Image 1 (cartoon, rainbow, N blue to C red):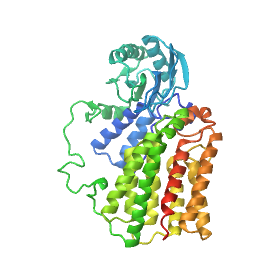
Image 2: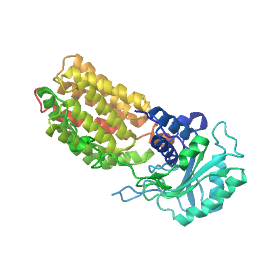
Image 3: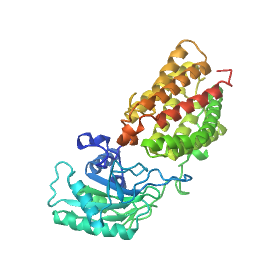
Image 4: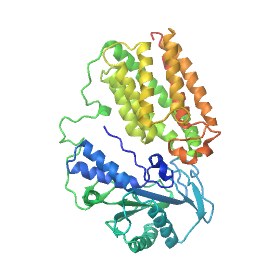
Length: 456
């Protein structure tokens, strides 16, 4: 597996901290290049190289005239005063970093082009460069309006000596019903131009004429199974491990119920400095993990397999950074608890410590960054310490869950320095981190399940 983080949004961090920028509509340029490389037969290292190259050569800048409204919500995530425009917004519903008066279409085009030409990637001369412009509508800007803006963008680029190559105008990377748009410039070299021009055929994006290919999961794809539907071979396991798997499934069932009850509040605190979808994402992830664990247990899976199926389902269904982190956490737990032996308190404590380390490596966060890690670290450390003291698992877990809750609430005093809330870090002071709060809630809920199992 390889991970490439898209960092195209020029407004989300200064140039000397380019690695901390967020990905917005430049995602399309990076994904298109990587996908075309894979289609052309590049190996994994080659696809990763191309994705990183495309990311280094992609810059974006976005604006909004109103916020988006999450499904079921009665108000948008943010509002922009009349006659004003939010500048530097994200695609996950984050508010802009600044506000300016609404410009004309030509003035907006000039703003986009001038800002992005100040951010030309290293080693590229503007005059004579070949560029793909992507003018992206965020959800409710009419196509006619986008084309009016693009008309001027095209002229401005040509006036600077830039050759425009196969531009795209439309809803390429939306944010529900947000009224806004962004401009992305992909600065080409010969390889990226060939990959950009390559045909593509997907449900959401088409380019040129692409031949049909066998897709994984089709009826002709022999031997391909889906853990969620129980068609994969289930590894052998001991009865002790299957008993632990049943406890895991019961815990995830309870977690799903608890998250359902807390989703609105998690969304509320996430809206203060983030994108407001943490509650919805946790709901989707927890429900998917619950269903996958049930399927695994019914198929006779042990603890490791059950956790792995739950991890894959959570990360796949929840989406976003939180979903990926929960997937990493559960998958690492599974690797340590195994399928072939009893799950003792010592094994659980070691597994949680390993999961803590894996999450910190995966997400690059540390204690004090105002992320889920602020609750994970004290939970894992306290669990290990109390198990070493000889406490039974439920009692040790209760102490650790209390430490996680205290740490989660203490994040209210911190300013966010990582994740999507980073761009509005000071705004988050006074409110705890939603990821830390949800992690603590999961820990407390799992304790309730463990406490009913006197065999632990």
